[in-house]
Image (cartoon, rainbow, N blue to C red; front, side):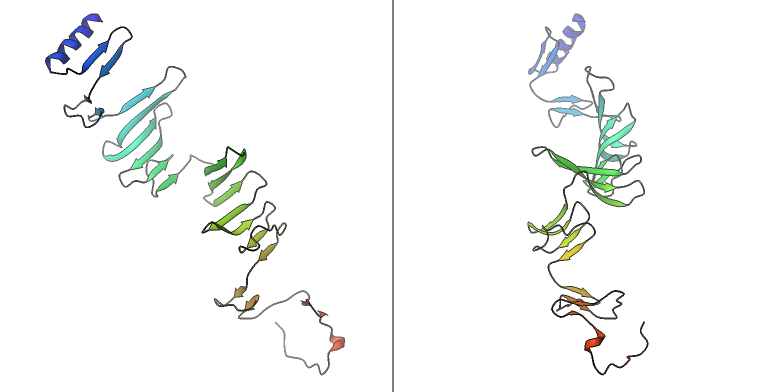
Length: 240
């Protein structure tokens, strides 16, 4: 081993690496400059070049604690890869166009997340307030989903203002005035006007087309409509 170290030092001295030093006491190798492996013109502090170039990182403090950093896939496609050799799986990939893949080596979007089954999820939480994370992703069937694991609502904002909220019990509230109000399970409240069949409603409920009513039409000021209070009633034809 000592002969190997001496030969290495002599070789490096002969080729003019004056910034090279070896601390034999603890086995450290110190280079005050750039290191090229497979190249004589390293670009940065460490430059690895070759047909199967890559960097292997392994820790002795745990089992299966090895990672590979690779610059391509299938010996052809430029792709930054963090690869798990024990699981034979890509864990993080960045394509030449900048798309990022987690669980996939062929991301089709800026960020693509895939799993082997059971759906793909992104988690967002608040460690400061100990909030249970919410999940965003899809089930195994491919259906998109927003999933909360707590009693907090799901809110939608534009321009820093809350515009819509789905309450913890399933109620839906629209508009900045009512967005923070929980209407109760299965109920909907809207702080604006509703247009059905029209893009320019002017009344609280503006309908262009037929209306079918199976219950009672109740007035807010005059009570229920009652035939006993009407005169000159005539039929209007067949109802549909």
